[in-house]
Length: 152
Image (cartoon, rainbow, N blue to C red; front, side, top):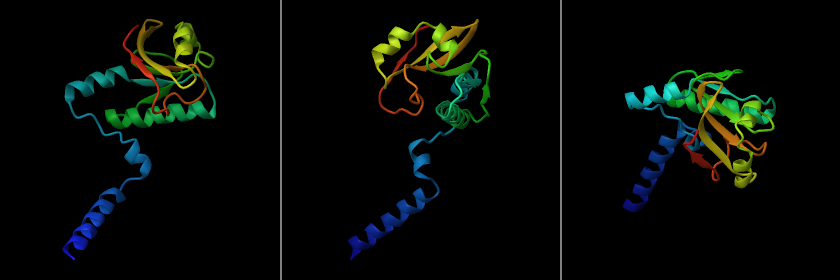
C-alpha cells in the first residue's frame, strides 16, 4: 500500500513538473546563459543570423537559430540579409555565396550528406560563425552527426 502511494505521488509530481512544457521544449530547452562574462561574449559572437538561401528548409533554419540564440542570450537576435561582425551564417555552398566563397567544399564532402561544420571565419572583414553543410537537409535541425572546428 505504501509503495503504491509513493509511486502515485512520484507520478503526480513528475506529471505536474512536465505539464508546463511541450516535448519540443523539453528536447530543445534554451535557458538563458547566467554567467555575465559568458553572456557578454556570446552576445558579441551572435549578433545576427544570415541564411541566404530562400526555401522552406532555410526558413526553418533561420527560425530555429533565432529561437535558440534569443533564448540563450536573452535578447532578440535578428535575421539579416548582409554579413556583419558577430553574424551566424548558415547554409550550403550551393545556396549561399558566402559559404561557397569560403572554399570548404572538400571538407564538407568528406563529412557526407549528414555532416556539417561549425567554424569561425572572416567574411568581408567581419568575424562570423558559420554553420555549413553539403546538402540541403537542415544543418541546424540535425542531431547526431557533425563536427566543430575552431579554425579560420
